[in-house]
Length: 176
Image (cartoon, rainbow, N blue to C red):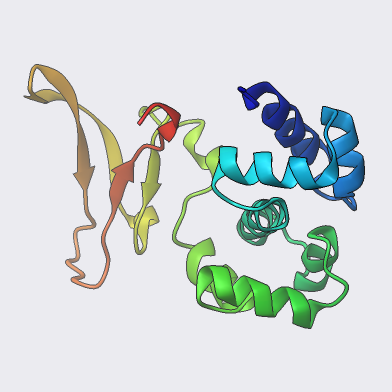
């Protein structure tokens, strides 16, 4: 039997209620299954258990909040469903191999926020790197690669071997 739609319904519910308490009994009821059967079906379809999936999504959301908001780590931990900052930090370190504060400090400057890209010539691409703001990144209309446009990254006049910039694009891996 194909449970794809049922699991998608559960995933949609989880996404809508990510910042709330998610009761798996209620979730199973929403998709019309017993709790035990729902747990088996969910794990078979997603390759991860329901509690682990919810935790993974909350950690992902927390990482984004750390980088893109001015919320305190305590507030983010509470939003993420943890009763304390210590419990949140313990789980966060398991996922990201560093505490939340270090993650925020290390990566906040690394990724240029999306709103900075609005005025760039390269749409749907991210500029990243160490001190990326010192680089000019634009479409190169003189040099082409494989008959397609290319990007020009021009560094600062003063050479600094410790800094770099790159452009990258994120894609949905669902089809791969």
